[in-house]
Each structure stands twice: as C-alpha cells, then as structure tokens.
Length: 271
Image (tube, rainbow, N blue to C red; front, side, top):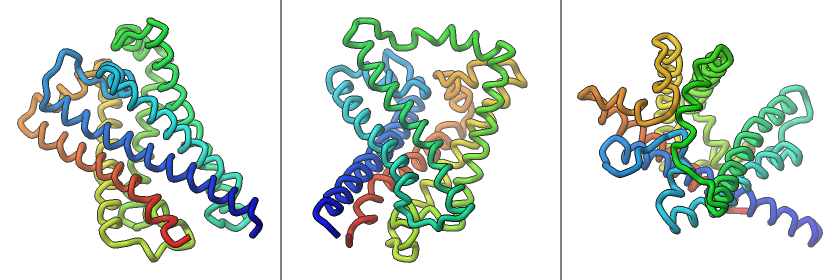
C-alpha cells in the first residue's frame, strides 16, 4: 500500500468515526429530551420533531452543540456515501451486493438533510429570523389537507418498516456488522452486543409506537398525535404507565446512540 493509499484510508476512517459518534450523540440527546419532556418542566415544551431548534434555545452552549453535531452528522452522511462508492464492507459485485449498497443512499440523503437543517437553523438564528415553535400552526394545517394525510400515511408505513427491520437486526444479531464490519462479524465484544441488542430492540419499539400514533392521528383526525409536539407525549403521560413507557423508550434510544458511539472504537481497533 502506497503512502497516498494509506493517507486516503486513514481519512475515510476519520470521517466514518466522526460520523458514527455524531449519529450516536443525536440519539443520546433524543432520549434525554424524551425524559425531559416526560418528567421535567420548563418555559419551552420539548417538540420531539424539532430537536435541533430546541437545543438552540439553550443559549450559546446549545448553539455550540448544534455546530458540532452539524459537522458530525454531515460526516456520517459522507460515510454512508463512501460505504456505497468504495464498497468498504467488501460485498460481492453481484445483484445482492449492489442492492445492499444502493440502500445506503437512504441514510445518506436523510442525514445530509438533517445536517443541512441544523446549519440552516443556525443561520436563521444569527440572521435574527429564528423562532422556536413558530411553524406549528402551519404544519398542523398542512398535515390534514388531502396531501398531508398521504404524507402521514407514508411516514407511518416507513416507520413501521424501520421498526420491523430493527427487530430483525436485534434478534438475528446482524446489528453487529455496524460495530465490527461485515468481514469481522464474529468478533463483536459481548458488552457491546448486549448494548446493541437493547438499543435496536427498544428503539424499534419507539418507532413502532410512533408509527401507531401517526395512524391514529388520521383515524381520529387529531393532528397533535402526528405533529411531534408536546401533545404526543401528553398522550402517554395521561396514563399511569406513561412515564414508565417513555423511560423504556428513552433508555433504548440512548442505548442505540451509545452503541454507535462505541462502534468506531471497536470497528477499527486492530487496523
């Protein structure tokens, strides 16, 4: 291997490590905000589909966190693209291999949009046009237009499919490929495997519940259930088991995040 190739591989690994840690932090923060919304009090309600905007409201340190997360999320997006283009997992050049690699376009575009959204919200803040929660009314109105209901239905089906895939990965232990890579599947350390199973299972449960809420929002014509505002959490908090259920979801979500934070330290440990 030439010096150029070594430097190139090292750069790709650094992008991947930064991206994986960034993705993990997003889910740790997400789980923390679920707990804050369920048990905490504050001037601003936690709107779970406006995480980036909510963090910005914390002041200068919130904005510093969003700046770092923006970089890390964009690195994760770049890593998914590099995984596809460079075939970093060593898939065969056949129909199955190409199909798996093409599926990485989904997370590439999703996290690219999320990172871009974070950068845009920071720009709006420094431009003096940032307002937390200002778009809630318009979003609620749109969700229950004929087009909006189709959007809700599509998101509900997508979340359900994602939840099923997470359950599948959890029970088959195929989630360990994120930790050690396709070629080193059998060498995942046991503590990390337990953490990964917990995270994938409970995060799948969280997506399943949100998917059901989206479906209910159409059935009952209640946009608050699909809007991601504090009303979604109030739906659970109104029952005695609500805080326990939300705690389990938060625990699983944070475990999912910690698993991704740990992954880069194990994945390239011996390279």
